[in-house]
Image 1 (tube, one colour):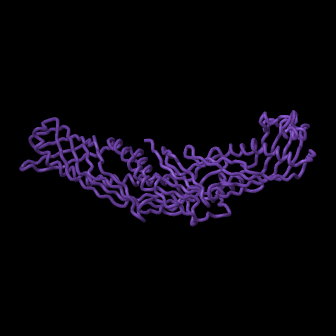
Image 2 (cartoon, rainbow, N blue to C red):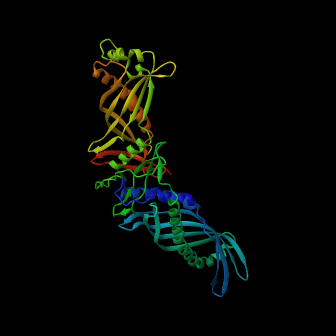
Length: 477
C-alpha cells in the first residue's frame, strides 16, 4: 500500500531523479504546466481511490455515559468501503510549493464494535458514513544538499461536516440507541489521525526521492547527470526545473572545459511538459563520446557492399574506381579505419542541428592470411545534419551526411584523379562510417521522465542554442 501511494505522489509531480550542486546555467530545463499537474492529480486520485480501500486504522477503546449508564466500547477493523472525490484540485503557490484540495468528499467505512456495561456485553459490525469532507494539504518542493528533489510537509487542514454510525449484528437494535454517542469519538479519531497520516506519507515520498540515482546510463560509453542545480521555481502556472544536463564518459565525471549559455523556454502552457535541451548538452555528449573513443571506427566490408548493384555498370564512373584499386579489393575485403582527432563540433541553429567531425582515415586490403595491405590514408572533415526522434522516452539522433573534404596524405595507389577517390569515399561514408556512428547513437539519450509514463505526440523544435520538446503524456496505472 505504502509503495503504491508513493507512486501516486511521484507521478503527480513528475519529479523523479535529480542530484548534485552547480552554481551555473542549466544544460536542461523542464517545465511542468498546470495542464500537466491537473492530469497528474486526476490520475493520482483514481489510483488513490483504488488503493485507499486497503487502508486500515488502529482500533481504539473508550468510555461514554448514557444517562446513568456507563458503557465501555471498542471500535476495530475500520476499513474504507467507498470513497468519492467530486471536487478535487491541485494548484501552485508561487515561491513555496503545491496545494492539494479535496472538497465535498464522502466515504463509507466498515468497522467492528463491542460494547459492555455492568448488565450486558455485545458486539457486531458498524457502518460509518462521512459526508462534507474537506481536506487541504500544502507541501514545499526544494532540493537537498546533494541536489536531489526534496518534499517537505507544510500544513494540513481537515473538516468533516457529518458522521453517521449504524450498528448491525448482536443486539444492535438496543445499542443503536448508543450509536449517536460514537459519532464524536469517531470524528475526533479521524481529525487526529488523517493529517498525521498524510504527513507521514509525504515524509516517505521525500525519503524515497533521496535514494534515487541521478546519473542515467546511456550505454557503455556515457552517462547523463540530471542534477537539480537549484530549487524548483514555482509560479502560478508551472513548476520549472533547472538540471545540470551534462553528459560524461562512463566513470569519469570531470566537467567539460566549457559552460552552458543561458537560454529561456518560451512562454507556452498548451502542453503538459516542456523540455529544453541546450547546445551545451549536445557538446558535452560529443566530448564524452570522443573521450570514450566512440568515434574511432573500424569497418571491414567487401568493396561491392558500398555500392548498389545498378551503380556498377559500364556507363558509371564507379568501375574507374574499381580499376584503381582492383589489385587490392576485387578478391579481398576492405578495412576502413577512422580515428577522430577532436570532439565533433555541434551547433544548434533555428531549424537544424549540425556537426563537424574531423579525423584521420586509412584504408587497407585484408589479405587471406589476415595481414593488411595499405591502400591510402588522409585527413577527413565530415559535415552532417541530424534528424531527431523520440522513442520509448529517449531522444534518438541520426546523422545525415551533408558534405566532406578529404586531403590525401599517403597512397599505395596512383590516383591520377582525386575526384574518383572522393566518389569512392562518399560511398564509404554513406554506407559505412555514418551508419556505424548511428548504430552507436541508436540507444538514445534517456529523457527526464517518470516510470510508467509515455510521451504523447511530442513535438521537436530547433531554436538558436537549444532544442525544445513539447509533449503531453499518459500514465499507465
